[in-house]
Image 1 (cartoon, one colour):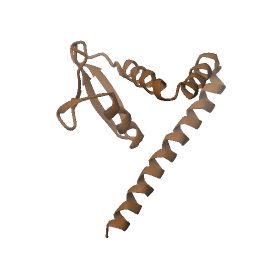
Image 2 (cartoon, rainbow, N blue to C red):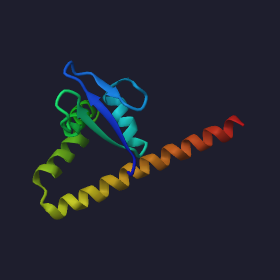
Image 3 (cartoon, rainbow, N blue to C red):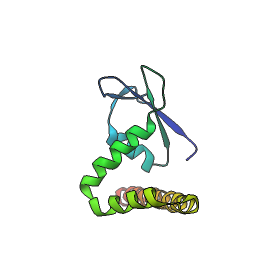
Image 4 (cartoon, rainbow, N blue to C red):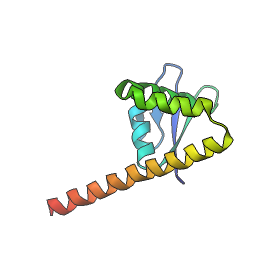
Length: 115
């Protein structure tokens, strides 16, 4: 993930996408990540990087949809030593890349079917 998209976090819990210049939400951040673009969330008031806070909120909301899967991820993260964390990072990077590849293939098939 080479590109980084900046989102601003406001005191009233609003997110602002600096690329589209519109209000945003956690689903858009997740969509951006799935498209292969890294994100950074900056507190507008303090300038602090609060990306970890937003990603945690996304994880919690995703947990509602698949609690067993997310619980396993939490256990891995909480109990892992450094080598396991590197292994997990490699796995997660490959998984995200596979999602992105599937998404691109799906879009290509749709375009071919429409022509």
